[in-house]
Amino acid sequence: MASSINASTSGPGGVITTADNSGILQLQSGGTTIATANSTGLTMNTGAILNSSGRPMVNQTGSVLQVVTNSYATNITTTNGTWITTGLSASITPSSTSSKILVLVAQATNSYSSNGYQLGLQLWRNSSSIFTLTAANGDGTNGPNNIVMITPLNYLDSPATTSSVTYTTYFSATATASGPNGNYVGVQASATPSYILLLEIAG
Image (cartoon, rainbow, N blue to C red; front, side, top):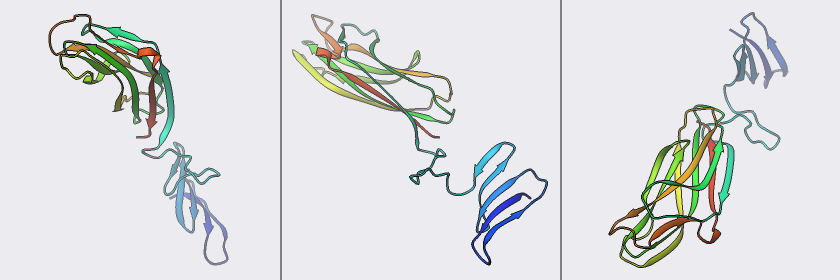
């Protein structure tokens, strides 16, 4: 059972109240329970709490809860296969362990190669790699080639935490032919900015 406040839609109309000792209160419209309040909080049974624009204020699954953006424009190059940071990163603190983080990256990359060098790109969460593009730039041919482009990297992550999470992109050189010979790969050439966008999605 439960106590209730009902906005009647039939008969003489008005507000109809019932009471008991359950410690549960139901908010009703026309006899249909819209919300239930008890010692643990308020639960929406149907519909949603709306703001003055008619949009839900209570987060629904799939809705965007927060957005974080950042950019970086310093040129960095490398000639070996060790993963190093691009300098591009952003941090977000999920509001729930069930939230997902949609990571959208527009990474400025370039490769100069006469022996098939390619640029590999990784996405890291805190101190661990979670996604790899093995050939994000460079065509793997014996050039010389100087390829400058914006490389997209999109990833839907489930960090399962309410602690701050930092997403960073890393890159390395991947040789598909002979070893280094004045060749390199890089990011943010000529101060071309890279961008990262983090969206917390309600789970």
